[in-house]
Length: 140
Ligand SMILES: [Zn+2]
Image 1 (cartoon, protein in one colour):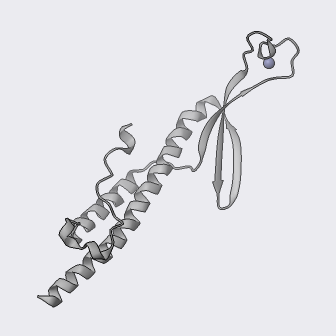
Image 2 (image 1 turned 45 degrees about the vertical axis):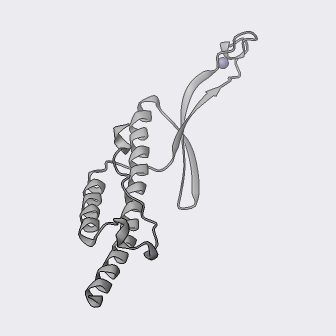
């Protein structure tokens, strides 16, 4: 899936003790990457949290194919969206024509979270890089 490709590029959790010698990004590189993330965030379409699942049901009708003794064929699939937002959980059915648009929104939401996490990580990394640069300027 091209949608999620190409944003994994370096570890962000190295501590200060590892220092710049390990080829960590400098201030300019970090700022450039943050600007790139901001553009990607702006390009995201509609978002929605949650996940979509398929349900198959048995009905109450006597002699229905869903209760066939040898080869039961349940009704469905029915698509269900489940999500928790601000502490409140919701589940609801989606009409067939709502499934693909909702899949895209859920994917966009996942992408939003990834981009945000990366931005915050880069904020932490930028702080480190700025400290390292200041130390260098004072020391030499
Ligand atoms: Zn049935």
